Image (cartoon, rainbow over all chains, first blue to last red; front, side):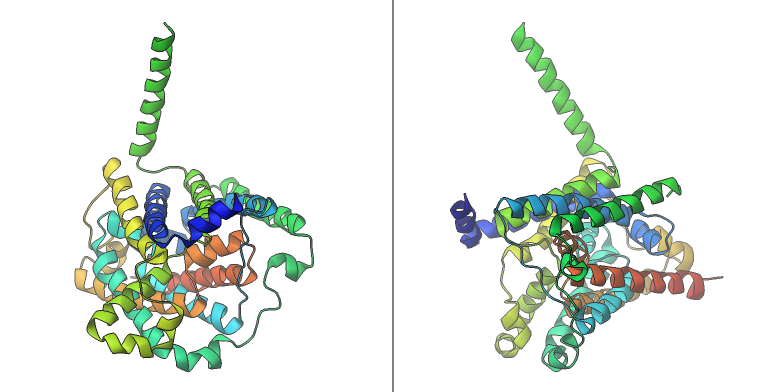
Length: 188
Length: 191
C-alpha cells in the first residue's frame, strides 16, 4: 500500500493531471460554498456574514480528524513547517491588507474568474502576479533580515501545549465546533 | 420486477445528484466538509497540502522566463520554487474550471466588473475598482509569499496539520483583512 502511494507521488505526469483534478473539485466546492463571491468575502471581513469562516472551519474540523487517522494508520507523513514572527505575522498582515482591497484570496480569485468576475481576472490575477514577481525580486534582501526573525516557540499546537496529539485534537475540535455553534446561536 | 425496482432507485439517485449539482449554493458546512476530505486526499495521493499561492509563483516565473530567460536562473527564489507546469501550477486552472462548471450548472455564471457591495459604496466606475483590485492583488501575492502560504495553504491545510505557524498566519490574514475592510468601507467610504 505504502509503495503504491510513493510510486504515485513520484509520477510527475500523473501528478500534473491530479493537480488539475484537485483544482476542479476545489473550485467546484468553493463556488458551491459561496466563497468565490466578492460580496460574501467582504461581508465576512466586515463581520456581517460568516460564510467564509463556516467553510474554513468545517474544512479544518473534518480534515484534522481525517489526516490524523491517515497518519495513525501510516498512510501519510505530513511535516508541518516551523514559522517565525517575521514571516508569518508580518506576511499575514500584508496579505490581510490585500485580502480586503481585492476582496478575494489566491484560491477564490481563480474561482471568481470561473464565475465570470472580470475584476478578479484583470485586477486580481494581474496584481497577484505582479506582487509575486516583486517578492521574488526582494527575496534575497529580506530573507535573512526579516523572514527568519523571531522563531515561534513550537512547530505544532500539541508541542506548544505539551499535550498528547489526540488530546490536542479533541480540544481544538471542541473549540472550533463551539465557535460555530455560538455563531448559529447568535443568528449568523 | 426486481430490475424495475432497481431502475426506480437509480433514477431517484440520479435526480437527487442533479438537483445537488444545480443548486445555487450548498450549506457552507457541507462545502467545507468536502474541502476537508479533499485536503486529506491530496496528502494521500499527492503527498502535499492544497495551496494556491505557489501556483502564482510558478506562473509569474514562467512569464518572466519567456521575457528574460537568463533572469530566472539568477533569482534565488525561483531556485527554491521552480517555475514549471506541475501539481502546484495546475491547481489554478483547475479551480477556474471547477468554479465555471459549478456556476454554469446553477445558472449563476455572469460577467461582472464591479461587484454590488463595492458599487454601493464606491460607485460604478470600473477604473477605480480595477486599480484597487490590482493594488490589492499585489499586496495579496506579496504577503502570501512573505508568509509562505495563503488562505488554503496556511488557513486550511496548515491548520489541519495543527501547525502553529499556519494558525497564527490565518489569524493575521483575518486581523489585517478585517481592519482594512472596516477602514475602507466605514471610514473612507462613509458618506
